[in-house]
Amino acid sequence: MNDVLTNSYIKLPNDIYDNLNISNEELTVLILMYRNYQQYKSIGLCSIQIICDYMRINVSNNRKVIITIKESILELFNKGYIINLYNLYYDDCNGSINAIIKDKDTLFYVELTPPPTERYFEVYDKDINYIFEKLTSKNLNKFNIIRYYIACVRVSHNDSNFGYLSQTKLKQLISDSRTIQRYNKVLQDDLHLILYNNNYLTSEKHYCTTFIGKYGDEDNFNIQLKIEVSMKGLVHTDKIKSNVKRSVKQEINHLLDDKDIKIKELEDKLRQYEELQFKEKRNK
Image (cartoon, rainbow, N blue to C red; front, side):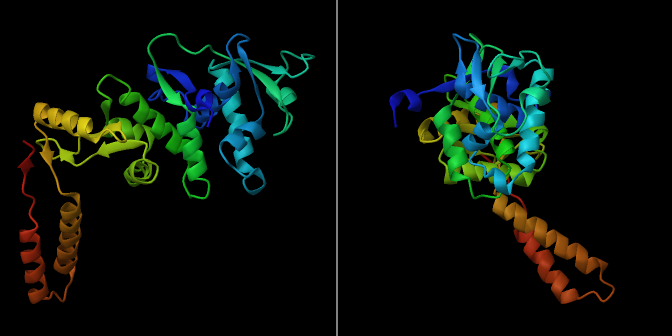
């Protein structure tokens, strides 16, 4: 790939990744609009079809996305991320969005707020392309995983190439914890874009954070993780064992609720549960 394309990136303000005033759909549309942004003109060429092409979405099989993208453009305009929209032929520079964007193939100029010159982080075009390319046939919400990836890039965009997302922050961005875990696995194991670790508890046994680093930087990631664990007094947990323990506990509760309680089976489950009792191990 051409080096210019390989090294091209979008500059985003530091505080946008967790700004709840901009939705996952709006943020995704915004960064894709910046693809064609010409800074010396302060405008870029766009259409709904162009955004769908970037996302590798077959519009004929997903017409709902056309409405989603158009609504996102309107909201970005209302919130000031888009300064103005212009008819391609300049015959109506201040018409309504419906008048300017008549259908998915309508080309228009979009004037965006200029990229920040300070307090920003960089998201590489090639990584966004790669996510859309590899997840074309996957049943994943593309808007949500892009927002999550942007958050991962933001918190690890520092000298140590390491950061974290708190449980509270994660649930604000993606409400379902199982979905977050799936995104972590996809971005690390399938796409090789991040490193993550969420196997630590606070001393009160609450899950505290998901630590994020850059893929391929394992040595540094492990060093930074060890520092954080030591500073915060975190406790390592074996999630597989914890999940098994939870399942056994549920079985015990069901047996206790059963009128025809099976004493031998209950004793076996209680013994199994005792063997699985959580043993705290501090990372040293």
